[in-house]
Image: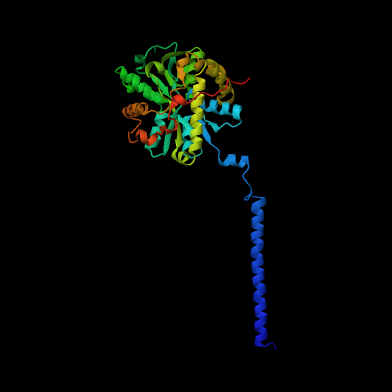
Length: 362
């Protein structure tokens, strides 16, 4: 027989062994988990440059139009001179895709239509306009064999614009108002800019207005007639802007500053000489826009002031004019003010910005 004291000793030994087994099992599980995290997940690795690049990526949206040309120019020049393109340019074919990607948070910055950026802020989207794309660079085109020779001839005609929130719609509103006309005298349709040349050629519309180079395409192909260039009816016209989410400005301000500095330097580089523009047309057309470089060369030189890339700081009076026209045209509500959607602090003195010191490939 086993006495009570003997039974107690056996039980104590049993409990001790049980604790050893439990603690050992827990230790084994912890060791296996740590080993898995180390070997398979890299949890304790120092981040490699490639991993840092994924975490710190800076994606910038653009469309292959001349008002976004400083995006590929900045990326290309920095890749060639420093090996670092500063950011990842992301190409879109139209405004709906670009806008939705921006709203999803998958872009750290984007070039976007100026009225669209203001409208998004009115809708509660936290963003800021930090710089401009370019000035002028838009044309109204009609067929050479049409009876449209001047703005007054647009009455009763079908005109394609790239988006209802585009400054191209506002410039139509402005030039008609200046001549005692009403934009309702015309039929306005929305059409992606890349489709406009074909629409005019097939007579699906009577006139088209958009950013370049799509308007120049009709001119180069011989069937388009320039009714006006924006530089002649709205000097200093703004089509697109560089917009950045508030969260990115708050968390990555240094990166935003580098981006703005690069875009500004590219603009001054482009306007420094015709040679620079022709060089940009070659690499942007072939590598970024997937367009015939000759088309870009035509836009950037016929005439040279058809599009300008300097004087692109964010200025209140420019946007207050856009706001006023947008309210009159019914595309803006007037609920967002300059301070709500603009941050001009990234360019304190535009005259101090110097162009890139780069003369192109050897």
